[in-house]
Amino acid sequence: MDAPTTTPRDRRSTRWDEHRRTRREQLVQATLAAVGKHGAGVGMDEIAAEAGTSKTVVYRHFTDRNELYVAVCTRVAEQLTRKLREAVGSSGHPREMVAAAVDTYLHFLEADPEVYRFVVSHQLPTDGEDPLTSLSDLVGDELGQMVAAALRRAGQDTAAAVPWGHSVIGGIRAAADWWLRADRPMPRSQLAASLTDLAWAGLGGVVTPHTPLEDR
Image 1 (cartoon, rainbow, N blue to C red):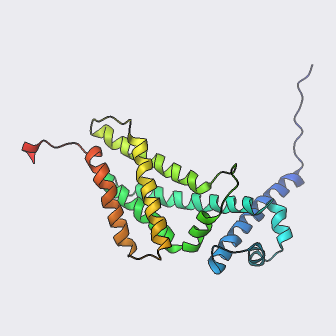
Image 2 (cartoon, rainbow, N blue to C red):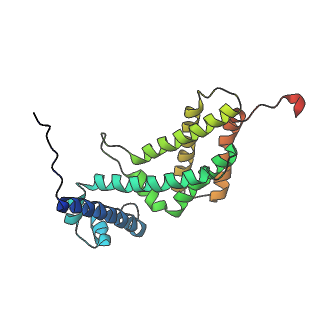
């Protein structure tokens, strides 16, 4: 029996797929702009107005507010991840890499506090995936890989590298959330330096070779 053949998709269908992707991107961008204007509590009417359309059209491309929220969070996560990777890659010294990651994260919050509030304040259904949690996991994994590389250079066991990475990222995120809620009671540079010192107080002793006392 002859193998079944795959029928090529109609070009009109392909063009519609591209149109949907483009329109969804435009609506995500409009949502970010609306959040910037109206704050984290922005409503769907305001989002639709920013996009120059109606809620009916928005729901034609996103089944509900949760799906739009996930799309916005995914965009934010992609942008922040790219900046963090660039920052961490700007130096080969572990402490400077941690400092760059901390400052980049805080700069993101300071530059777009309402966008950050929008991302962290929305509650997804229990079966939904939180893009920000996924982002924290991704950054924790990357920091863990950095720690593992430093441990290997120091001739030490790398087994604890990943949990250490996630521990550092979790602490930074908690402190950053407090800083934003408290209306930034200290300059970003001061908070970044303090968090870097704290993180490095734990990591510095395990990611650099131990120097014998007689050589100090």
